[in-house]
Image (cartoon, rainbow, N blue to C red; front, side, top):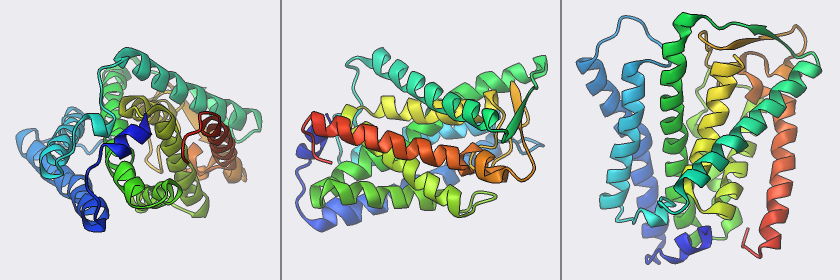
Length: 287
């Protein structure tokens, strides 16, 4: 449970609970991807820039592994405090995958039913390698982001302040990390905040990093590589379907930002926050 992660933290000063974790998180989010990216490019130069490639996938794997090392040894944080455990490993991963699949599928079908997009079959055999590589990339990408914001920062912030504010502040940081994504407008900003709160509440309920990480990664992967929407403004070409946004329907479809920029995603986020909040109250967990 998440509460046990918070209780296991021995630090009491604001410096150790807020300042040092923020510095280490910044190293993980900025410096490690930069170093890993440069190293991979030097070792595996590529002529075309693509979101998913062997080099970008290896770089994402390194992001997770190096961040774990930095948090574990610089931050002196136990893996169990980060929500990493082998207990019910497969079950938690499958729950995360199913949750991510269900959420993005509901959003896609509602957007299509409301005329926001046309779904066109787009698969070609030559896409198969990228589609498989994308599974690995997003498994680590979702876990990487959840490691930083939910696994590491949220318990430390919750030790220093009320859990409500820990969730809000980490969600703002999560949103800011995506602030330079293409086609960013007001509604995507709101939706990124809502999504972060949803993942935070899932983590409060489960206390399991892989569950929330795979839910996050599955949402992103299926959104882009199965349903063919932009992923936070990033265009995906090699997908099973292509979601073609319809004219004057950006509020529904999300326009150039993808499904995460539409009102349907907003509504789902609000509904999930309410349902998760009720579940937390029933379990008498702090929120």
